[in-house]
Image (cartoon, helix red, strand yellow):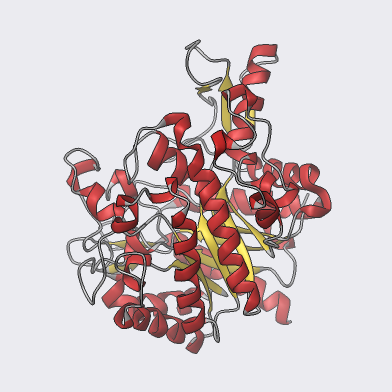
Length: 452
């Protein structure tokens, strides 16, 4: 049976973060306010009223963090660029200080042999654009392309590959449909234009990047969908959920069309926001890679509210759970990857796992070490499942764990720790955990194999 020791010689190892979750310095060097600055100021929006104002202070401590990455032995570092640092209002000329930070970060990474993999949008939309409609407004897609051009022209001589969007599904659902994340809108199905405008923004940004000879990737959260039973109603509900979670963003990119949304009472033009030529542009964006963020499967049952959504989420039982309460199902990653290959065939580009990891209630032991065996077990199990998918013929090129550092976990504040490195948020002291050493040794063993 395949396991992590069987990963291909050219397989690449990395770790991921996101700007608002780690950088801090939200009002320094000309950075404008983002939707997360505004959202976290709302009473009750975030656990314990925490914000990303300081977070991990990566903006000032990135040199220390790059040293941690070097010692870990990473091939690549996936980070996101804060749009409000580059264009404080989401439009107009670039902010030199904001570009300068990412200039230094890229140079520091390259100096220690780590390839930078920037994400252009990881949810921190400039607040000024949100006030103009945010991703509900078509114009935001064009502003995104202009921002992409600025960043690519500054960093593109050293950055060959870019991720346009991170988890557009989660941003649409949590940010615009349910109001759990910024910008905190509760539009339910009226949030669907956000999907189309994000995809349009991706396509316009991809044009900019491809014109400059860069590779283009999009990263989305994907999940195997399990019907709660073999009953026809549960099977239909699971199919409806799969359309929303897994196909709404992937089908237009790889098949040139939106999936059947009739279960939601939605027309193929998503209520009129799809204009002639849009889907052709999206399909022609030429994905050079698909980023897959995987955490757990989703179990779906028939709806309990006849007037609501055509599904209800059901609990997955009999498996371990993370500190976040998420079910731990490593083989779900293999199932997901094989399912993508079977669904899209030759249209599926090479895959990189751009996020995978777990929250653990870890804390320093009396001797100062930080044991986190549940995280080691989680990573080992998922890497074995990944190797099994590759053995079944899925083209997976690399793995980026989430996350390098404990960080600001969105609406959960600092209550959930995903990092290989423990961060004391009062002192900003960084302490590598047991999982850091485990991952370092795994990477070293693989590197010895591929160079031996």
